[in-house]
Image 1 (cartoon, rainbow, N blue to C red):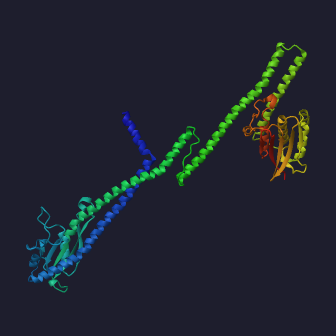
Image 2 (tube, one colour; image 1 turned 180 degrees about the vertical axis):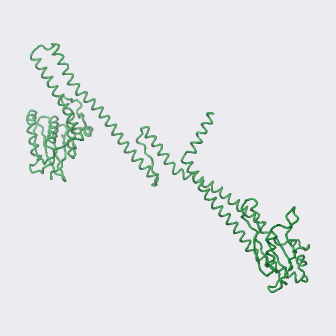
Image 3 (cartoon, one colour; image 1 turned 135 degrees about the horizontal axis):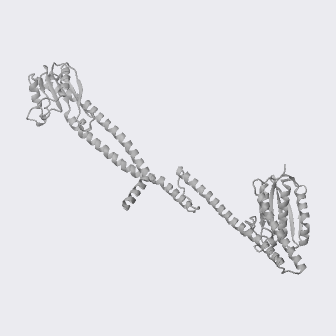
Length: 511
C-alpha cells in the first residue's frame, strides 16, 4: 500500500513538473494544428478527386457515344446489335464489360443496357430514376451531368464522395449532325471503385504523418523544455543553497533572454544579500566586541574603586595620608568612568538621526590656535612641540564650531598620547575643489597596516596593552568620524610604523 502511494505521488510530481507540462503542451498544440491541417487536406483531396473524375468523365462519355454511333451504322442501324457487338462479344474478354457503369436507351426510351441490380434484389438501383431523367434530356441533343450517392459515406457518416455521371446523345455514324438514335449515361465505375482505396490511402498517410510528427514534436519539446527548465532548476538549487546559508552561490548565465536576465538579477540579489549578511555579521561581531570592551573598561576602575572603598570601610588603611591618597585614587577612577560614560553618550547623540548642526563660516587657523592654547600645558609637560601651519587667509569652512573643536581636541590628544618627548605635531590645510582638507600629523611610532582599517571603530586600540587608564576610552576617533560625516565630509588616516601618523578630514567651504 505504501509502495503504491509512493508511486502515485511520484507520478503526480512528474505530471506537475514544468518540463512535463512543456512537453505535453508542445505535443498537444502540434497535434491539434496537424490534425486541423490534415482534416482540411483530406477534404481537399477528396473534393479534388471527385472534380478530377468529373473532368475525365465527359470526354470518355463523348468518345463512347461516337463509338456506339458508328457501331449502330455498321450493324444495320440496329442499336441492340451495336451494343452486343461492342460489349458482349466473347472473342475479346476485355470487352465483356463497359468502361464503367453504363445506362443506354434507344430513341423510343426503351432501356437497352443498365447495371445489374444490387445483390439480393430484383429491381434496378433507386439511382436509376436520376439517370433516366438525364437520358431523356440527352435524347433532346443535350449533354447532361449529375451525381449519385457516394460509397465512402457508408463508413464515415459524411458525404465525402459523390459519383459523377454524364449523359450523352448517340448519333448515327457518330457524326455531330447525325440523327439521334439513342442516349447513354456513363458513371466511371473503374475510377469510382478506386476512390475508397485512394481516400483510405490518403487518410492512412495523414494519420501516420500526425503520429510521426507528434513523436518528433515530443522529442523537440523535451529538448526545448530542457533549455528553459535547466536554468530554472539551477535557480531553484541556488535559492535552496541561500536558504541554507550559502550566500556565495551564483547561477551561471548562458543566455541573454528572459531566463538569462532572471539569472543575472538573481546573482545581483545574491551578491547584495551576501554583502548585507556579511555586514550584519561584522556588526554583530563589533557589537560583541563593543560589549566586551565596555565591560572591561568599566570593570577595571570599578574593581579599583570597590577595593579601595572596602579597605577604607574595614579600617585596613589607618594612616591619614594613605587614606587621603586612596580617596584621590578613587576620585581619579570616578573621573575616568565619567569620561567613558560621557564619550559613549556623546557618540550616541552624534550618530542620532535627530542631530542638528549649527553650521556657520569658520576660520580654521583661528580655531586651531585656540585649541592648541587649551592643550599647551600638556604639550609642555610632555615636551612635544605643536605648530599651526594653516594660513590665516585660508577660505572659511562651513562647520559647527563646538563640534569641530571637539574633533581637533580628540585628534591632538590622540597625537600627543602617541608622540614621544621631543616630537612634533603639525596642523595644516589644503584646498580642494569646493572643500578644504585639514591634516593633523605627528612624529610618533606610527600604526601597522593591519590596524589602520579598524582604527575608527569604537573601542579599538592599535596598542592592545593600553586600557582606559593609559590609552583613553578608544572612542576618540569614532567620535571624530561621526562628527565629520555629519558635516558631509570624509575622514582618513595615513600611517606606517616608525614614520608617524597623519589623520585628515575634509569640510565644505563657506560660500
